[in-house]
Length: 321
Image (cartoon, rainbow, N blue to C red; front, top):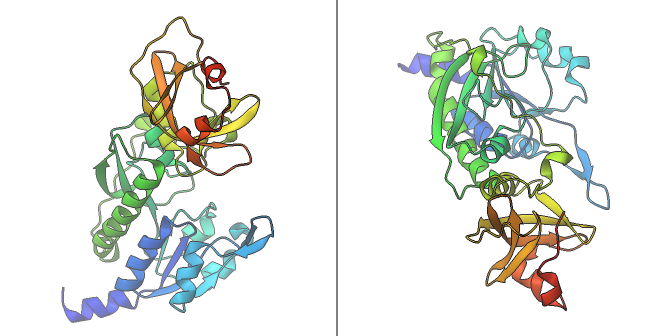
């Protein structure tokens, strides 16, 4: 690559579209290596009890680097806002809105997406959570051309990583965001010079990693201890799994698989108190909760939770729902 090629690439009109923390390393990698003409992110939202306005993590990076930040409420109603920028390339990463075909067809180099799974597996908005919940042993990043369907575009490049048995959605999120940054920067030169691969997805291998719903967060004690363990870590640190204790929500943030199997107990029945928490009967043994959050209170160790119970003998044998 000669100096002229570098100059041309740095002068490309690149528009980046993203919103959450996951997108930040990808955007920062782009800013370091290329000229980002504009950033498109979700509108500011009120958060907390006092309704204070919150900027998206991507907007914060844009402001820090004096880059134009656009925040259409509905991008389908603001197509000209994007097309008027005359981008050579649009790069999206967890933006949060579906792009209309007028925008997809606008850039001469196309619209490229950074997706946190090995497509065609786990199309959708929660591939990191779902990979852990479903017990996958590996996942990765896919750089892809965007199509009209959900994550159905042609694959340009992929890179996989192992999912450690101790990984949570939070730790895997951080690993994949860095991998996404690095793979995008490695892949962009071939996209720009037109030599990149373009591989159609195998429709027979499609699975979905759809957004987490409230009903997905509930622990079902009829499942195996590994399934419960995967659910808890797959929803840590957001939005968290939960069960009911004495009719109130008890969030579960951390747990481990136990050793005792008590077939005479009911699923969901508290089995014993341990040095690091308390056990609960599941279909093939017990799961031991080590970090919980009672309704209306802060996260605490399961030991502290148990210590706050007056009659510990009655606590053993109670049933969680």
